[in-house]
Length: 210
Image 1 (spheres, rainbow, N blue to C red):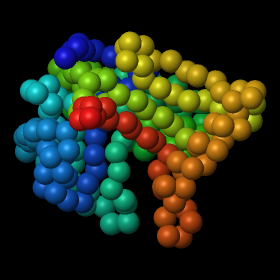
Image 2: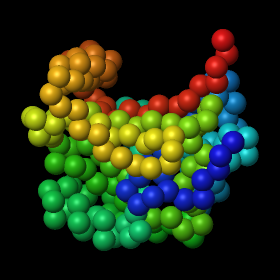
Image 3: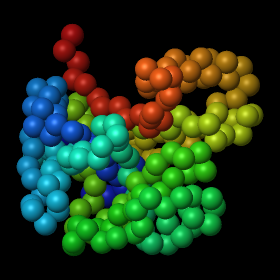
């Protein structure tokens, strides 16, 4: 299993689950991926960490907010969370959670892009993020589906198995294929009222059981 000490700046480095039923979620992911779970301690407000074969791969926290659906969040690595928030704000971002220290683990923030998509920011301290990726039971691919895009370019944000963050522009003859694929995926996020709730997608690799 290839381990990772840290993430390139701007790359996905952590994911966590906001769930109204932590016990059920922990049991589900244990059965699905073989994840184990441990609490981070009372000083972290009930936060817990998932591990795969002893390596941390994701986090989680109880959702006590009425009207807020359960969801996964993605955090991007930053060398300076406060500076990243300031830069995002100057470009039209809304600050949901300002940069704040999380003990000695690091600093976090949450902002939005101009379309309202939430983006987590993580400045590593002792906690560097998920320690493995692209292996069975670990994060392997990330996408953002957004209404804020150049009509001539469909941007797909991905995390490659080779360990480099990259941007891909889908243009020309591939656009119709990309548009159809995005529309089909977004339909899965549409609630009974027709409103699309989530636009971030996280993929976890599964072992080949064939």
